[in-house]
Image (cartoon, rainbow, N blue to C red):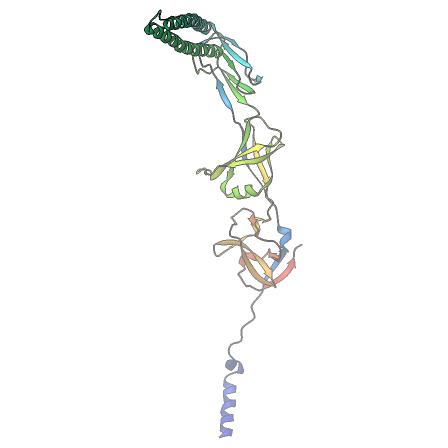
Length: 347
């Protein structure tokens, strides 16, 4: 029996190799040849820029509030004027006449009122002595009250006439530059007719059109500056408009100059530096519809996803310390968990 069993066992060994009983032996995984580079050597702090223009906060057309003939126009295009400087004068004779007439009526009322007060006082004394009636006294009191009311109204008309006379002189409401002179000496103008255009040179802001994808970067940025004709003007963000330009996919950013200011109309670039660590876009690869990079972890490929990364833009690193070496050459065909054969390490 035993002999027969051993004979059959050895026959089976001859027909089937021993590996067949042990199961199929896994073939060793082939390593992918790659080069790596230390992560810290790839970190950058990207600078960026966007088109920007200096705009004046105050640009106004100087015009009279009353009608009249221009008798003097004291500015030319290109003049820089101080606040309060007389720019133009209208012929005041009509308004001088109105003021004199109003003052004359006021004087008449004042004289009449003084007389009425005397008559009121006299009527009151006579009424107390029984030499006059209550009706006469009441009439004199009413006359005084009426004149007082007229006097108040006339004083208002005098003040109004004086204001209109003052408006025949047009002054600069702020310091600035005359950019246009549309009025002519001797010409007739009505209320609201433009005489000259004044632009504020000191009350200025920088307006930049920043791509929406870079707004968060801009909020974190440092060293913000406006570059115009190779000169840098430091700026700070005043506000970022909440709406996006549908056509350009940009948002308007308003900035204030911290020291020297360029003139309104100057065009250039808003520049800034992001203080956060980034990786250059060429390092990134796409896996499972996401962008990231491959790291060497004990000679094994580990894919680190960067959810906020965008094609062609530097990628923000969530953390730098302890991430190891970055796979450079050979990363295009790598998959998570691939064994790595590092043929060189770039410093």
